[in-house]
Image (tube, rainbow, N blue to C red; front, top):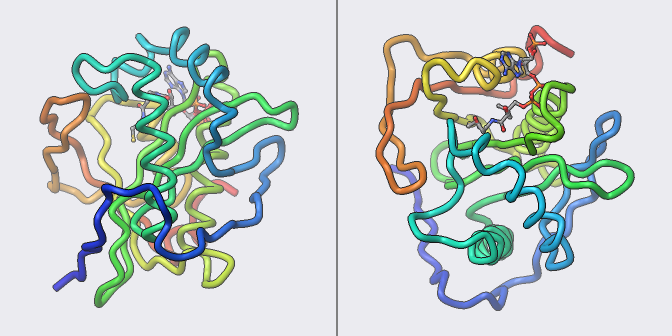
Length: 210
Ligand SMILES: CC(C)(COP(=O)(O)OP(=O)(O)OC[C@H]1O[C@@H](n2cnc3c(N)ncnc32)[C@H](O)[C@@H]1OP(=O)(O)O)[C@@H](O)C(=O)NCCC(=O)NCCS
């Protein structure tokens, strides 16, 4: 049976030192932690990307403002690092522009070490390979050996059938579609059926795209 993280998430005060990972770079992108100073850029990004994100992976909870969304994303990222239950990261360009979000959630360290993944890219940065690069960085970090990586054995993601860009990213970066397996995931306050994909250190090492 999986061991579930039981620490309270009510407080933002880390109960142990927050692990500060070295930024991981892949070509033009860096995967890094969320920061308060990302607020202004994130609000501009969400303003121009809302319709794009809402189509497949709405980020807002019902009735949530963009400011509240940023507060929640920052809080989730901090809590995830403080408790070890998630690794939620942004990708940024060398000039500091935010490109997207790449998340490892529900990190469980039981008989196997597992997590759930999702991702998004700013509408203004799409179709330039950044989604693929971001997932590559995220999987390299998550599946990489401890202590540099998270030492995970299995990363699962759910993708709505027909979300072609995400399907292509998943397969090219080493996720394997679980034929006949679907899962209902809550997205933007609604339960939506997703196809299930799984990545492992082996499937990532043997991925078709470098
Ligand atoms: C899915 C998403 C992250 C893709 O980001 P991106 O930076 O455009 O991705 P890439 O440029 O790396 O493209 C990945 C592949 O999809 C293809 N692609 C990208 N946009 C496409 C589109 N609109 N239609 C068809 N194919 C598309 C690319 O050509 C590329 O194919 P290839 O690997 O065969 O070359 C982005 O569209 C997004 O944020 N969507 C909304 C959120 C979402 O769906 N998240 C997934 C939930 S897990």
